Image (cartoon, rainbow, N blue to C red; front, side):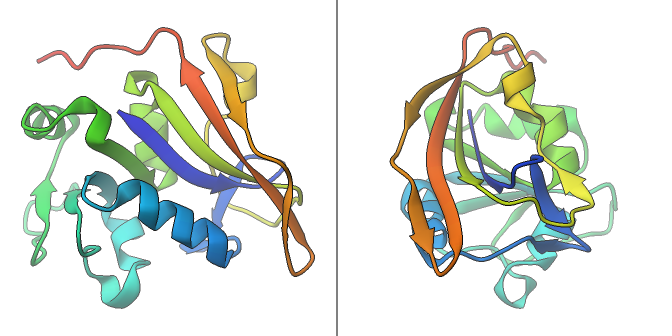
Length: 169
């Protein structure tokens, strides 16, 4: 499995249910990486998508504690165990964890790669991504040159987990 996110200097990813910033080339990178694949997200993250609907061209698996929650064109699961059972139906390399904070926190130990857009700015945030720099089994394996969008400087960084946990049922 993979993680994909845009993080600021403090590993912030969101504020009040929204992304900290929208960078067009980052959105294109997200689309290119996830199109034709499986994305796993929480209900709150889904609410932040256009019209609160699953993204087209991907299998959307939404984790919600609400047993009555349903969504058209998406698969809804209600627990980590139910999610893992569903994920057994897909190739592990085609699965992308796309947020939010609680979903990243729950699933990062099971992921092999993290594809991050690291933004060189500290925003006000209330939702955070796990700080992979502080985790001994996560290492940077690829890093792009710095890019700029208006006054925002960022680069793409790939981290690899040397000891991902196995999904066990």
